[in-house]
Length: 512
Image (cartoon, rainbow, N blue to C red; front, side):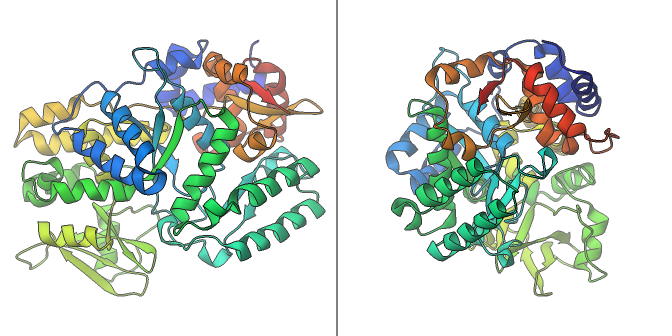
C-alpha cells in the first residue's frame, strides 16, 4: 500500500537532508529490511588487528553478563566484527533505539545463521537526562495529550542527578522505586496515560527494577544492562540473540591504554606526532562530533565559557561525575598539554605524553571523545560501527580528516584507513507499532511490548520482511523532527501521520 500524502512528503524531506536515508530508500525502499541488513558488512580491515578489541569486549562483557556470555561475545566478534554504536548506556526504553538494535540482532551472517549475541557499545559519558532518559523510563501510551505528548517520562532517579554522567551515578534503590510509583500514580490521575500504560509501567517497576538480582547489583550500569536484557528477552523470546550492552568509553579507554605502549598504533601517532596531530586538528576543526578550536582555546585561556556544541579535543576531562571539554595548550611549553576548566572552575592539565595520558585514562580523569573512540574502533581496527544517519555523516568526515593527516607520513597506512567502511547505518526505523482504537499507529516501546507478552515466534520471523520504506514511516512520529528540524510541518502533522501509518504500513508488525 502506498504511503499517504504526508508520509510521502516526509520521506522526500528526510531524503533531501540525509544522504544515507536517500540511498537506502533508492536501493532498498520497496524491499524487506533483510536486504538492507545483509548489506551491512565489515570485511575491510584497518591498520591494526581487531583481536585486542575482541579481548577487551570479552572482559567488559564478563563484568556485566558473566564469563559464559562473554566468551560468546568474543567468538561472535571474531567471526563477524560488527557492532551497534547508535545507543546510549543506561536504562534504554526509547522505542527507536531498542528496535534498531533488535533489527541488527536479526541480521543473518554469511552462512545464514543468527549470532548468539549482538554487541551495543553505548555512550556512557552523557547526562542522565539525554534523549533515551536513563533517569527513568519512557512510556508510549496515548493519554489526554495525544500523539504529540509521546513519550511520557517516568523518573526513577531524583532530578538533581539529571546532569551527572550515566557512568557516575549510584545504583537505584527501593526508595527511588517507591518515588517512581508515586509519579506513576500522578501520571494516571492526570489522564496522561491509560490503565494499560499504568499496568505496563508498574510491571517494569515491580518485576524488573525490584527483582533481587537487579536491585542488589553494585552499579547502575549493571542494573540497567539486566533490566534492558529482561525487556529484550520478553519482547523477542529466549531463542533470539542476546543483547550485550557495553559502555563505549571504558572499552575504548582499555584499547587506548594498549595503544599508549605501541608507537606504531594510530592513536599513538595521532596523539604524540606533532605534525600528524596538528594536521588532524586542523582538518577536523568544525566537523560534527569533533571540535571548534577557537571556542575551546577561549575557554581554556579563561576568556569565557566554550559555546554549546564546541566539542572537545581528543578527550573529555571528568570531575565529580561531570565531564568538561579540553583543548591543547602548547604556548611557551616544551611539552604540550591537554587543558580544561572543570565544574569547580579549576584548571586541569595533562601533559601530552604516554605516561600522563595513560594515567589519566587509568584514573578515569580522562575519557576518550567520540572522535577518539571511533579512531581506535573503526579507523584503526576496522570494526564495523553501525550507527544512525548522523554517524553516517560525521564518521566518514572523521575518516577523511585522519587519512589526510596520516597520508604525508605513511601513505600505506592512510590507504588502509581509507578502505574501512564508515557509512554503515541502521537507525530511525520501526518494525513494530501499536495501533490503537480510532486507527492511530504509535511507536511501540519496550515497556509496552513486554507488558503484552512480547512477540509470537511467527511475528519475530516476520520482522525481516518489513518493508524499508514503511519502517522509516513508522519511526517518523518519533524521529522526524530531529532528522529534519528545518522542515515547516503542517499543524497536527503527527496525528495525521499516525492515522496514515495505521493503514499505510501493512508490513509493520502490530501489538495492541
